Each structure stands twice: as C-alpha cells, then as structure tokens.
Image 1 (cartoon, rainbow, N blue to C red):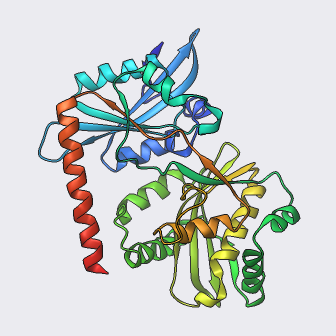
Image 2: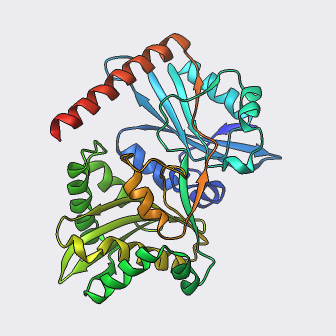
Length: 340
C-alpha cells in the first residue's frame, strides 16, 4: 500500500527508512524553505512502513506545468511508479526524474526489469547525478587507509602537515560562512552555475544539527580549503567543497580530505561516498578528470549506480521540455566559454 506521509509524521520513524541524506526529513524541510513543493510517500506492508520516497516538484516558469525529482531512494516498485504516474496526471507533472541509490552490480538485468515495471519509464537524457562515484571503505585502520593511498597523495598529506597546515572541524555558523566564501569563489573560478548562497544557507541551517559537518584547512589562520560533509546512517558523503588560490603549494586539500576520512571514522561511518566522479579509464582531458584523480588517490573503489530514469507522464510536453533543456545547456556552455 502506498500513502502520502503527512507533515506531522514522526521524523525519527521516517528517517529510519530513508536511504540517503537527500531522502531525509530534514532535506525535505530545507527544500520547502527554498520554495519547492515536497511530496513524501510511504510504502507499507501489513501497516508497517517499509520504504520512503521523498520527491520535489518544480514549477516551469510562465506555465502551469511542473516536473518532479526523486533522488537517491531505493528503486521504486511498480506500485510506487503507478502511484506517482497517477499523482502526476492529476497535478500536471510532465515527468518525474528518478535516480535510485542502488549499485548496478547488485541489480542484475536492471534495465530489463525497469522496462517490465513500467513502459512509461525511460533512461534520462539529462541525469542530475553522475552514474559513477567513488567509495572508500572506512572499516580499515588509519594505517591501512594510508597504505592503500597513491604514494603522491600520501606525500602531499605529509607535506601539508609539515608545512603547518591545520584542519579544524567548525560545524557552526562561523564555519559555514568561511566554507560558503571559499565554495562560491571556486564556483566562480570554475564557471560553475550552481545554487545560490541563500539556498546553501537554508540547507546548512536545516541539516547542521545531525547531518551536516564543516571542515576547514588553515595556514596561519588563513582558510585555504573547506568541505561541507553529510553523515547519515553509517555513511559519510562529500557533496560540497571549496578552495582558495592562496598557498596552493601547501596541498591543503589533500590534508583536508584525510581529516575528513578520520572524521568519518570518528562518527562511526563504515564507508565514505565521494558523491560523484568519472568512471574508471576516464579521459585525462575531461573537465572532471582533476577531481576524479584527486579522489582516486585515496584508494577508493569506483562504483556505478543503475542510472537515471524519467517516468514520462505527458509525452508531448516531455519532448518539448527536452528540446528546451538542450537549448539552455548549449547557452550555458557558450556563456562559460565567453566568461573564460
């Protein structure tokens, strides 16, 4: 049985079934504060909640149409997909993008199963999450983790320590201010058009109690690099990071990632999900090759997820949406080149 979960539902009971930070109650509340509609569904067996599905619904400007997004849940059953399709029909939703948090290797013939579950489900042309990430096993000792790193990464960590870089956990509003400054400096430098400072502040304020953590690397009290990390259900995640152009030779980012790994172990995490990267055998000239190589240096394992799918509800509007999306994508690429 599928039911809409009310706003006064028990947060702890809900989060017990949530799979990922983007499925937590706190994330949903943050999205509401940014002006986005949030729908929470519960899948029940014998009146017991077994799975939760939290999706956001986004208005398309100057129309009465909307699109939905369901990130990092379990893969929905046919019953859930049918409920979403009917809900979308009634609420003028063109399609719902679904990006499950399930590894491809653990789901045999998944693409075939997907098509059998719903003929209205197609592979997304415009995924929001990359299909690959890198995951580090935190059950190993610190000595084992260091041993498994690339020699250059180990060298850079020791160099940074030797030169006097210090990493502090500053999971408070002052720490967030420092992180935010470095993050948006990095976005500007890399021509990345992401969310606004207001959005990130709302996310921080909503998740800072139990999920979000801030780590900052300093040299003589000057912040050189900062991460905002998420911890949820024995897994540490690295969604956001920023660096300064100052003292790049001190390799502060290398030490910061090592301290993030140690923080994960301290919190009780069993694995560290690096959030996204290219896959193995990546092209060295790809724009993502730099941070893919950086993450790989810590002895991570490349992990592929089952991908991104669109539950198509309005076929004609869906085709038009994809056409406009591609035009917008080309415009942003041209804008980035001009800024460069």
